Amino acid sequence: MHHAAPPNGLSSITGAAELPVPSHGGQVQAVMRHFVGAPEPFIDLSTGINPVAYPLVWPDPKTLQRLPEEGEEQALQEVAARAYGVPSPDMVVTGAGSQSLIALLPRLLGARRACVLGPTYSGHGQAWEHNGVPWSGVEHVQQVLRQAAQQAGTACVICNPNNPDGRLLDMQDLAALAEQCAKAGSWLVVDEAFGDFATHSVASLLPHPALVVLRSFGKSYGLPGVRLGFLLAAPALAQKARSLLGSWPVGAVALAAGTQALADTHWVQQAAQKARLDHARLVEMLHGAGLAWRGQATLFTLVDTPHAYGLWVHLCRHGIVTRRFAGCSHSLRIGLPANEAEWTRLACALKAWQVARQEA
Image (cartoon, rainbow, N blue to C red; front, top):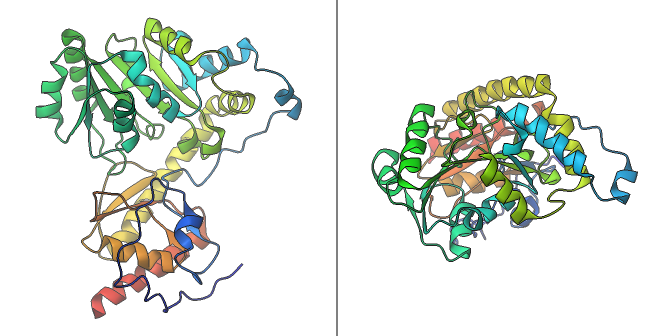
């Protein structure tokens, strides 16, 4: 392991045109090739994924030598229904990550238009655009989104907690919006990809004729490579989604991982508590460095600063990768460090940033 001090000879970056914004988090090697000599191991705080993974007991390799059994998928649906608080496994659809289910939404709903509360995860707008469905991004629930919900055939999409700013909407407001969609012949799609550690879920409203809820497995359980996600909806709509996905929507490893981890309620409660404590530690550290932050999501926070690019470069020089966003030049998303060594390196990097800003 190389723990050398961050190099000073990065004049090719400082003062030059900004490096391109990564299309998503986690592209550590692609980012760090611009920072030769930065201390290793690199710390990836760019994804908002729980750095403490569920201690999965991997299935017997022989499981991979056959197709998944129907009963294995049913078992996963049953445990997911209990974990997510829906009354029946008939309301649970399994998919290869929530992204695959986001891509399914235009075909599933047949909406004539979509309205996405943002700024948010870009995959939602892309899904509608790739299917030739007009969509618009809005920033206000009470005004613009409620007006859109009154137009029949509209899919209103909300991420809650939102990514990247961690905004968390009130359950009563979402329930009222779902009712409004039902009356108008529209739909409310609530993406709760970061919702496992939240105290409430709109899934408790199911079955509801206008409501679709998305959940992600990999983020909270720290196993994104498993590629497992869930769509929760009224039984008829869920059955339509399963028909569109076809047989074997997820593989044997995902079936085993999801069934095992979602049944472990003690682990997820402990993980949620640790994430809350770590989030409090992170925002205190950011405050100490003179940085403004916002958001109620526990696995990440959003830093607001006019010097966002400079801070991103500074952290990269210290071997720490955070998340930049196209169109949000004043913001950086920062996830939770995995261990004390990473916390220490982040604290040192932020202290160095604070000193540099004071001397500037």
